Image (cartoon, rainbow, N blue to C red; front, side, top):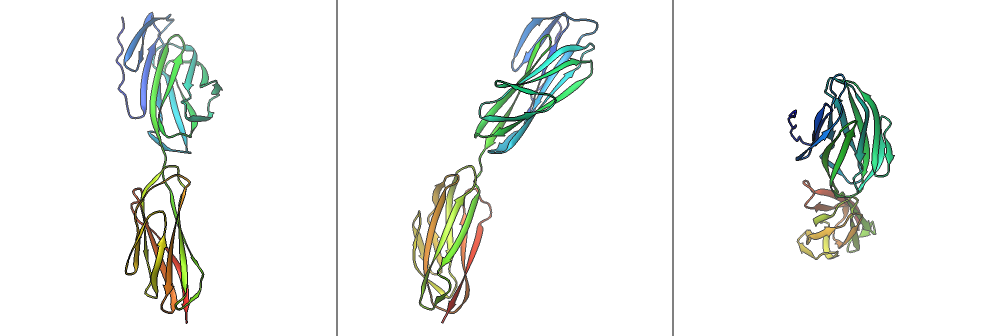
Length: 273
């Protein structure tokens, strides 16, 4: 029995070898299976490798790359490569004549001479969060399987907006700042905190929002909002009174678990006598 050394598992890469010669060995994952095939002049030895991205975000495309190589000394005929479409990924397309057949993508490579290789690519749309294992196999007189894994994540994308109403106001008049926080992303935002700073020409009257507000001088802080779902909105309102003339700036700061640098927004208001 001829012995073949199993190749190591790399990051995003799995390599499998199948040999056609008298008797040959197919290496797959952690199990070696024995089979019998026929060899001609020279011995083909087909090697299959599979690469995929380690991470993609929801809604993005991912391209998986399969390389089939004949490292033997004879021609491999009727080579067929099949790639399984993982549940949760949508098939977008394949190169080199790859066609979808049910839940598989099939490339009919045909003849692969000694030393020759073919690189085959398939593109998928990531439409579900999770970890996905993608497996491909090559057949010509034996079968070899290679797999790789990819993680799909969502990401929060927080939009901060602030609008005043009315504007302008007279001294001793009141206005309300409406602060809207929108999660435009694909994952939940967590521990969202809103801090507001009044200019010298304004004084605090009241505040409402999805969490309680605490006022200290010119600063108003809302308690953390534990979660904000993807595509959801949270609305805060701060009512103030004009106590001095000027073209003033009301400042809003947003922090969350997913934001390293606070997001800042200012809204200008004209206060007149």
